[in-house]
Length: 160
Image 1: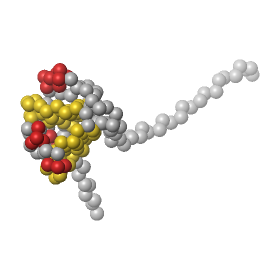
Image 2: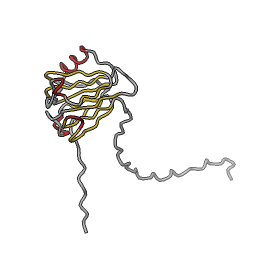
Image 3: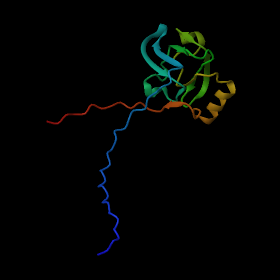
Image 4: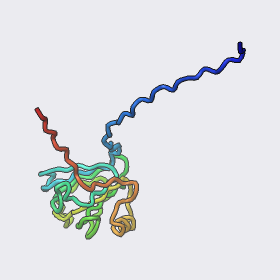
C-alpha cells in the first residue's frame, strides 16, 4: 500500500458559448454649441438642429443645400464659440464666420441667403488660420464629429 496521495485532478468547466452583444448607438454628450438652421426667414420653415463640435460637409444630406435663410447659434459655456458657413461642399468657397451667441433672422442681411452648402461649428474660437487650415485639408479637426450621410431606419416588415 502506498502512502503517497495523488493530487486530485479538476475537470475544466465547459466554456459558455459567446454571447453577441447588441451594438449601441453612439451618444452625443456634448451639448455646446447648438445650431438651428431654418429654410425660411424669421426662423420659419423646416428646421434642422445640430450640437457639439461638428462639421457637415454636405448640407444636401440633411435637405438644406443652398436652402438656409435664418439661423440660431448659441453656446452656454463659451461666448467665443464659432460657426462657419461655407458656400461650397467640403468646407470650400466663400465663408461666413459668426462668433458668440447669434440669431440671424435673415441671412440676406449678411449676403449669405440660400448659399450655405457646408458648415463647421466649434465651442472655441476658431481663428482665421484655423478655418483656412480646415479648408485646405477639406476635413474637420480630429476632435470633431462629422455628418457624412443620414441613415434612416427602414421599418421592418412583419411576416405572418
